[in-house]
Length: 55
Image (tube, rainbow, N blue to C red; front, side, top):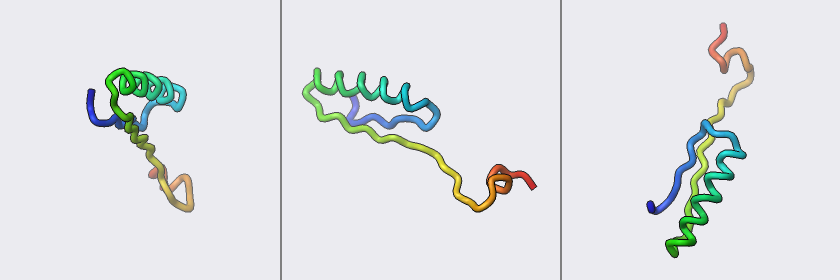
């Protein structure tokens, strides 16, 4: 068991919730405090086409 779990930005929120529940249960069984980091990607800009690389 590691010191924490870093969730990837690809999975849906429902999948992440399921994984987090599993991680918390294992942490509890091992008398560890769960530590979860959720990564998400975002793009900030004024125009969707330019943000997606369209000219």
